[in-house]
Image 1 (cartoon, rainbow, N blue to C red):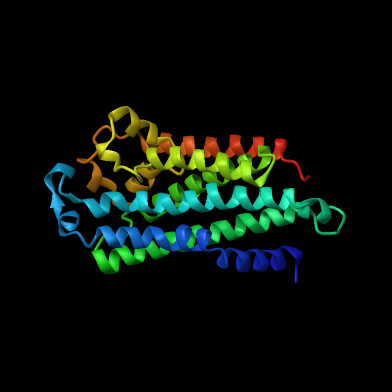
Image 2 (cartoon, rainbow, N blue to C red):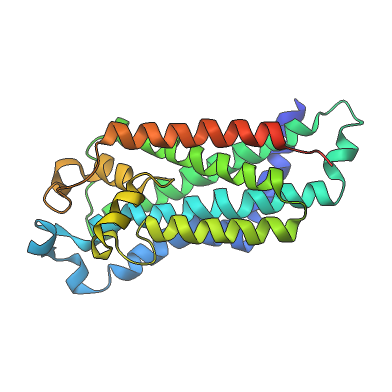
Length: 253
């Protein structure tokens, strides 16, 4: 049994025992979407949104909520805490490299994100009759690139924050900005146009997820949407640049 496997299992157990990460990162996006679905007006097609229902337009934003909590709140806090407590330094004296701990963290985070997405999509379909992603491959690419960008940003915060408290504060500030631009706190179609366009390129990319999920069905709701390939390219750029910076600046102790 490899060290990575054992550490991944251990980190998964710790993740499941942490209410903030598991409940809010995995379960809360689905719960809040289903809660909104209890309002009849939000389940009805609207001419204002090109005949699309509110719950369909907002579903990717609900997913963004969970991705942000896992990548921008959980990861920086845990990694910074490990460094502050000397766990990474002590592991550097053993055959198990501290990088294995980081790899296990990223694997668990990805598994949590996939679980959150699957739960949201299936629940939205069964309970609210929201169609499954019309372009599964496009949606999967947008999901992986967007979450990769969020993870890279989270690791960059963990790399530069001197303490776990500083990591939590910085991560919260970045999280608030990305969630606002992603249309979580206020639906994107209610934001000024320049904020909507900024949100197109803000990880984890709510607009790219929406286009992969609903495709042409949202064309009338956002006719000025930025090109999908450009959005995905920006997500990839975020992931590469933030990831490279995190690797260069990261301190084990």
